[in-house]
Image (cartoon, rainbow, N blue to C red; front, side, top):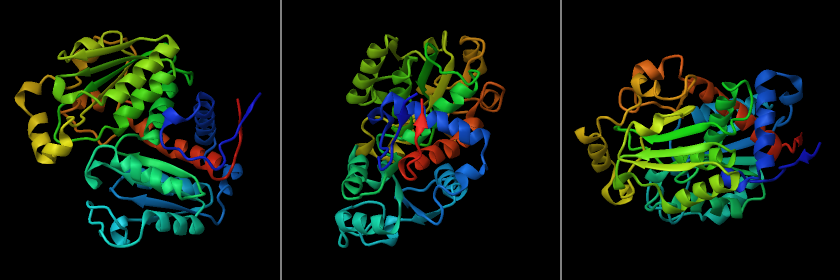
Length: 352
């Protein structure tokens, strides 16, 4: 048995973790779920502070990280950039003049043992800027930085997805299964990050990947597609792009992830124009229905990071029916994040 140590490490995307580190986090998350309030977890962060730094609001992320810190014996402190004086950022009600990221990062690292940062597309001017800012904080901190969702990646959501998929596969790895990641219509102009993380992580864990979307408006970034393709090649699995057909991808799928994401020109056209486009009648068939799910494998499950745009991304019949595992996945955010905090901040080692 080898020991996996992640003490002091940042978690920005699962693509930058080793597969052993991914498996160690998942193994610990399952143990923490099984014995949630055990004394052995209750003092890992005793009297210690974890900072939650939110450029963008959240429901599940804030609650699950606060609960995670509490159950590990620590405290989660909520702060927003708009309540601080930070320099050089234009959006999100952040002052242009003020403290540098360099100084702010070093000060916060003196107060806390770890920090989570959430910075999505509506807080930056260009695709990728959120990730750059998160990494700039990490550069100047000597405590673990956990990505609570940026404009490219969402590692905690990806790991929670996988945990849920394994729960409904007799707690076994899903290698050899098929995931359909499909665009869906809707009025929420959703970020890429959860979709990217799902594709990257599941392609590394040996799933066959189908990616379906209606037209050139909804191509994902080239570097993400190429990395997913490379991951599948390394695992000797299939990667299939399906453009223009809202039904084809369901055939032989074991998991269906039907979710809206914004178009590649979102940063130029803005949210209102994106919503108008994504709700156009021409996209009316891009919704997950029970009829489509019947084309999939018998035990096919519906997954989604929530909040669900019901009757746009998926029908109520599927979303609230026996195929849906979205609530298990939402709960798993807590267990996955406890595992990450235990390993990176408290230094808990896991044997594989």
